[in-house]
Image (cartoon, rainbow, N blue to C red):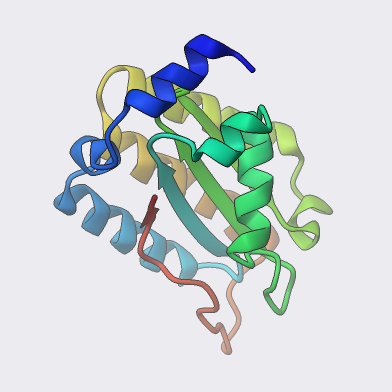
Length: 165
């Protein structure tokens, strides 16, 4: 266990994530997800996490491993077209991960999602939280619209509002 990382996570208060992303930022992200999903069959799930829970620290989870856990727990994989996408922000470790379900992975390379992640991390380093998040959603939307265009029947299977944990 990395003692420095563990102490960093354990000393961050629960309200840290809501201080970084204001209510108006969260509303803008919700709107961006809603508008995005109107243009494609993908289902975006946006998760912002401040400090990792003790269990994740004890297991030495990386941001990627935590994203995989949340992808499963939040049932992002459980969409009709296997078109769920998790955008995961780990604030304390300053990492962003995007995971796509198998239907999307068959058409969009992980390297495309990684480019979006790195751009979002760069925006966050400049304290541009809302812009970084909304731009990432828009870039993801462009990829999804290209490979999974919307149909007449385009159900909304996952919540549009970001989950802050």
